[in-house]
Length: 405
Image 1 (cartoon, helix red, strand yellow):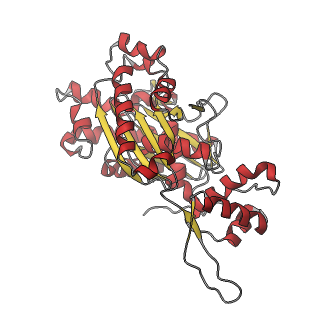
Image 2 (spheres, rainbow, N blue to C red):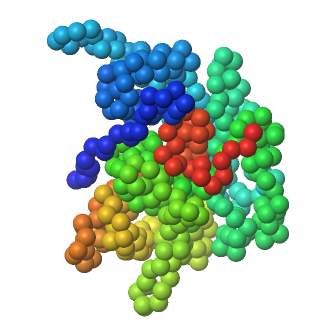
Image 3 (cartoon, rainbow, N blue to C red):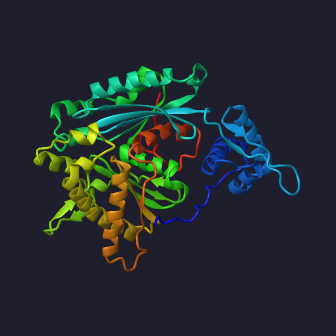
């Protein structure tokens, strides 16, 4: 049975001074996004802003095409309340996920609904291939929008591993071609080619941001997040905020120490990543292509898959307990670049492993499935321009790289 978390507190901190109107508008939009429909009185109560200030802000946001009026709701006394909601067509955004084996691009509306998508697979990512895919793909996505909507694109958010050149050996890539990433400013080049603001953030951090905004963040205020991609990564959410730390490395779970059965010390990147399954497949003479050519069905892998799930669950359970011993998280959320049924199996196995461990002195960790799925990194990327321009950033994703226009 799935555990349910308590309702989280709403963000507060509004002020009535005109000098912070931009913050107050973001606060109103963020509250409406979280609750889907809110009246003026409800927004005033949740934000701490005066009713007069809320009226002015809502009129402005409605005039800008960001809010829509709902049907009046009549109560027992007084004027009927009018719920407001985000206009899905008020803003659009594009997200690009650059992975070690594939790249995905999505166009979303203001609510985070995916409208269009594109994908590409490769043996390893090179600047030339990825830039061509991004440049052409972005133009195609824009052309797929009605003409009147094309001016409403907030920008492009790129979710990608930092320092890609360091992973050449583990993914069997050409070191010389991967070294090209050192001198290639993908963010600046894409901004110059498209004329759009471009934001960049780590791929796993972006995935955690997507889970915060579009997934479990609506019910959890504090959680540790694991994303099992080619290499495992993750994030930390505290008090409704994505905590990235002073160097941006909070939630870099690849380096998390873990112990093998023989007692030797290893790290999660070598024990709980999809690339370990790829390695086992190659050793068995299968090759890893089925993981990427048929990403929604891994059942043909049989025993290899069963063993990988068991090993990954074993190590993630210890990482979850260790994380919850450090910070009193409400839950550990697990997602990854695998089919939904594999995620369900993995989460169930992790919970079983956690239940075997000695957790005296801490709240027994709850393991939950991520709600966004394998597209979390691309969706998180698409969320970057939205938060930079329209919503409370909640410390989300912009501390390190910001935007280039």
